Length: 147
Image 1 (tube, helix red, strand yellow):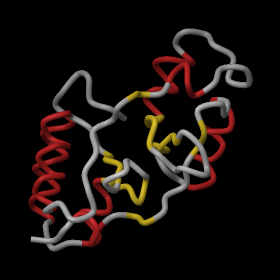
Image 2 (spheres, rainbow, N blue to C red; image 1 turned 90 degrees about the vertical axis):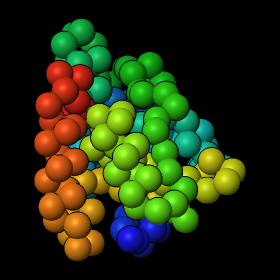
Image 3 (cartoon, rainbow, N blue to C red; image 1 turned 135 degrees about the vertical axis):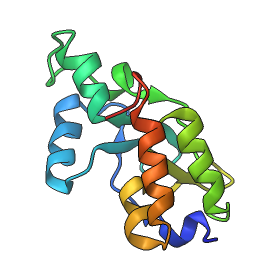
Image 4 (cartoon, rainbow, N blue to C red; image 1 turned 60 degrees about the horizontal axis):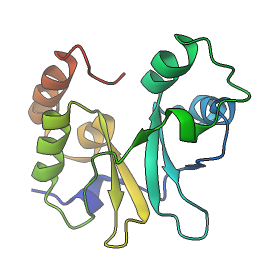
């Protein structure tokens, strides 16, 4: 089986904790992605969290927050589930299923963001089509599954 590095999107776009929700939402639209990793600083590129389209819906829109003044620090998911570039892809599958997430940041030993794996990456970059269907089914059956 492949490693996480084999299928990850390398050097994904990221945001800073101080960026506003509007900045993140705009980037999601421009990049056609449903999540953006949040890093501590551009210098360290250390992962601080992740912001998802579901976070924007539940923590911003549903609570009536202002997208132009709410920072990602306020609404991001802290300490997201991660994997390492050399991890067996099976480990990422299992982490996605166990934690019911559809995207998983890939970090190095210093917790620096080096990539991200989404279900679509697995579907298009591996031979694991049946496995992806199984993963989607498991993640989608949870009422807390991320969007």
